[in-house]
Length: 97
Image (cartoon, rainbow, N blue to C red; front, side):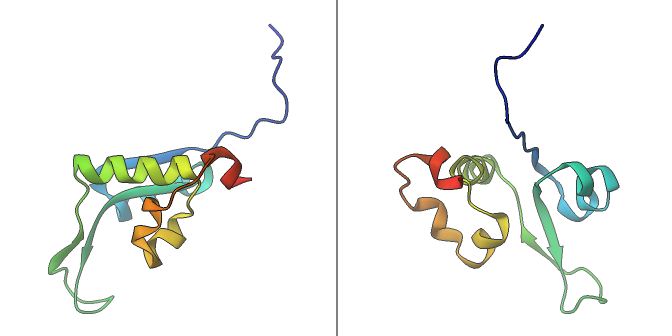
């Protein structure tokens, strides 16, 4: 069967309560996924022991990231401006292009 759609770009994302570092450690995720959202652990410095939870993905957080993806918000942008997800986009699809 021939497709009647042309020039379609498909992006893949992971929104999980799993550990983001573990997901991003996979070559498959790095190669084929636009972004992975997951729980993050932290310490006092990069090489020291893990001491606290930096980000915990709850049901509410999963919904937030789905809104970000739908609005075309770059994951790096949302790190520096977490309230960007609240910005109104008249047409979320056209905001990405």
